[in-house]
Image (cartoon, rainbow, N blue to C red):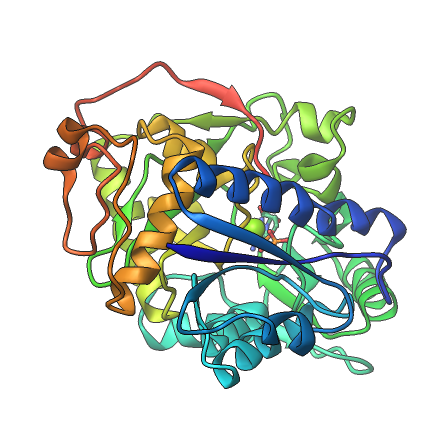
Length: 375
Ligand SMILES: Nc1ncnc2c1ncn2[C@@H]1O[C@H](COP(=O)(O)OP(=O)(O)O)[C@@H](O)[C@H]1O
Ligand SMILES: [Mg+2]
């Protein structure tokens, strides 16, 4: 198949904090990994870096011949333009991997996303969206305060957990001033935290669960994934929030988590691949957020979950192309390296073929590995 790997190049940010660039500059690494993987599977690949212009670079390609592998998380360094990028693909009649603009736009606004989850009876923490200047608190402390429309733990520190009016106001002010947007204020969910990778469309499949290992952090209110914990490798936050994959969970909890994650994936209309972050309190998994087009860095959540399921990074990239091709009823590319044995054992309704079925069975308990989580 002919695949255009379209990704955004980030030079500077118009808001937030200087270190937030760390999170934004991952796209180049991912572009390399995806392009090389797809080539290894025999696809014809051209990478298209997007800086300020989107229309011109795309116009050089025939949309009937090329499928876009969409790695554009922002344009002109604005994350809120992510859905606009999709509008341009559609206007130019390109087919593309991942979610459509409605899903990207609603998931980008965590308040909107939570309204949709609530309407579908999917558990998510009680919340309020609070913009400047008034603060009318309706929820009881402890609360969690974050920017309503950022990701990658931007703006998240131990101060995000607030236990009184003064701390709440201080954190709201920080979010408003630094990120120039309202804050999402949620009930603090005290408990275990999981990342759930979902692949597919009509028949989404959940890859082995990952859990953040907070066991080295004694204070339950400090058991959160801060910005440093996600990105700054020599920080304590990073050291003490390693990821265990596959997570050690009882079958009954696993079943609940899988159900909630798939329900959330469907409710938000996610396509091809995504990651659902959730925390479990009193046996109920509460969805924190749904990440369509979630980070495909080789060391991030989706790639790790795929590896645990016996699927290499290259197989994962190829699988995403296949899922998109299948949605558009394009003639599917033939895999070069997936063994027949794997194919036969795991052919699914969506054409998800590369994941061995055994990876989904509860009795398969590979040795847990400690690895990093990323956005
Ligand atoms: N309501 C909450 N209760 C407890 N911890 C939370 C809550 N919301 C977020 N967190 C913590 O903050 C981290 C980042 O929040 P999340 O909503 O996933 O945003 P991001 O898009 O930045 O990943 C989570 O991984 C979790 O550790
Ligand atoms: Mg998250």
